[in-house]
Image (tube, rainbow, N blue to C red; front, side, top):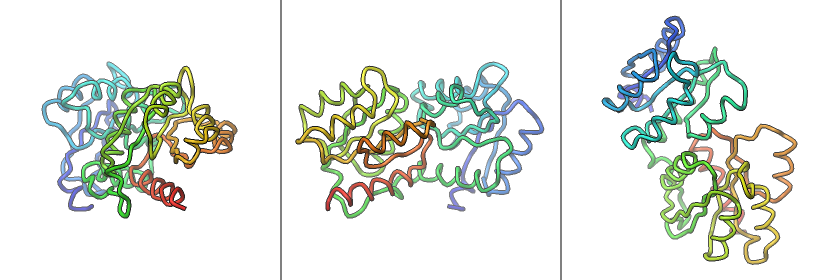
Amino acid sequence: MQALLQELTVLVVEPSIPQRKIIVRSLDQAGVGEVRCVDNGSEAFSVANQTLPELIVSSMYLPDMSGADLVHKLRENPNTADIPFMLISSETRFEMLDPVRQAGVVAILPKPFEPAQLEQALRTTATYLEPETLALENYDIANMNVLLVDDSRLSRRHLKRVILDLGFHRVDEAENGQEGISLLKQKHYDLVVTDLNMPVMDGQALVEHIRATDKLKDIPVLMVTSEENQARLANVEKSGVSALCDKPFEPISVKRLLENVLATSRQ
C-alpha cells in the first residue's frame, strides 16, 4: 500500500490554516505523495473537476457550503462522482452527518483525529483505487443475482460500485422495501443488500417479510445502515438479518461479512 500512497494526489478542503497544516502534516507522515489545499467548496469542486485527485479530504463547515453539500455536488457530477471522499469534523449530530454517510464516503474522522484513524481511512481509499483486492474467491458470484434496496440514489450508486468490485455482475435496485418485495416476486435472488431507514417500507419490515416467506426465507440479507439507536439495531438483528454493516463502511469489511454470510448460506 505504501507505493500506492506515494502516488496518491489528495485535495484538502479546510478554511482553517492551523487545521490545514495538521491535516497536511499527517498525510505527509502517512506517506502521501502530493497534497493540494483549498479553503472553500466552490474552488474544491473546480479543482477536483479539472485535476481528478484520488482522494478529497474536507472539513464540514466551509465558507460557501457544507462538506455535505460538497460531497453531494461531487457525486452529482459524472466527472467527479467516483472520487473517494473523507470528512474530518468535530460535528457529532446525526442529522448533520447522515447526509454525508448516505453520499458514500471512505471515512468520517473526528477533530482531533489519531494517526491510526487516518491510516485506516487511507487503506480504505486504496481498496477503492485497487478493487481487484476485494474480489471474493471460492464463490461463483458472477452468476449470482443481487438485490440492492436503498432510498438514497447516491448511496445505491456507492454500494453498487463496491458490490461490482467484489465480483458480482447482476445487481438490481429498489428504492424501498415494497419495491424490493415486488422484485423478489419476479426473480430469484441469491443476496439482498438493504438499508434500514426507508419510506413506504423500511429494511426491518423487508427482512421480516423475507424470513416469513417460504420461497425467500433462506436468502442472505446484509443490512448497511447509519442507524445509531442500539435498541432498534437489536430488533433488526432479531428480525433475522444475516449481518449488519455501518455507513460509512470499509469495503474490506463488507467483503468479510459477505464471505461469512455466503459460507453460512451454503450450510
